Amino acid sequence: MKPPLIVANWKMHGGQADCARLARQIARGLRQNSAEIEVVLAPPFTALNAVHRALRGSALKLAAQNCHWESQGAYTGEVSSMMVREQGCRYVIVGHSERRHVFFETDAMIGRKLAPIMAQGMGVILCVGETLDQRQSNQTASVVRRQLQLALKGLAKADIANVEIAYEPVWAIGTGQNATPKQVSQVHGKIRSWLVQRVGAAGKGTRILYGGSVKPENVASLVAVDEINGLLVGGASLKSESFLPIVRAFSQK
Ligand code: 13P
Image 1 (cartoon, helix red, strand yellow):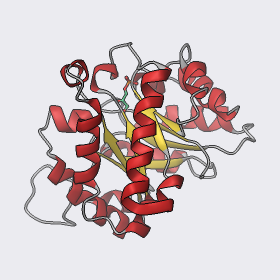
Image 2 (cartoon, protein in one colour):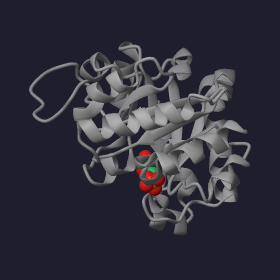
Image 3 (cartoon, helix red, strand yellow):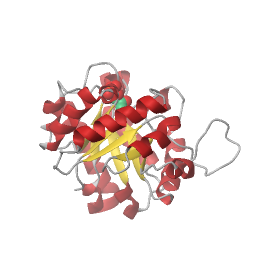
Image 4 (cartoon, protein in one colour):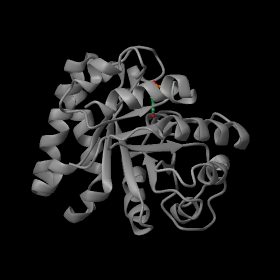
């Protein structure tokens, strides 16, 4: 298994100067961190370059929050995997629930993004997760399975090494209500067995992250869950005072 992965998703927050400042604070705060842990920052597109420069000399990595599946073309308002790689990105988040539910990205659209991202030498952080209605009607397992199956449809088995999965229940995102350790453990367990079914033993090494209202106050209970290999943090990653304790808690794992 690779080291635990903690990703800060800053969503649509911060201009270049704010993002660069926050990146420097986080990098400074983690300098003494000797434990092996991978920390990735995902600022808005317009701050990628500034954050890339701010992270020079640190072990922190850069991610984009999304990209288009084509490398160029008549796609007004879109940004390609080649363009974000050029800004210094090592990962791209795809299929975030806000992309699915606010911008109506389908499983098929999400699936098309994987190969181009990997062709640029970057890793994919694929988000999956059910809505509250789906959970309440016992569809969590089938929804998450369908999202995974469709996104990974064209994936060559060996390429699973470049994919991380983030389980983010939609009802836990930005609500203050995180999934319980038991709920996370159940879904992560299922994701693991589907991955192994799909790609064989290589699926045992895929990191499965949890995201949804992760805070310094609840991180200890999540760290204790064996099936969690990292975190995708939204709101609490916008301040170093709340993000650093989350990373440190995970460093004890
Ligand atoms: P919050 O941590 O703000 O709930 O956001 C989670 C998320 O969507 C990270 O991608």
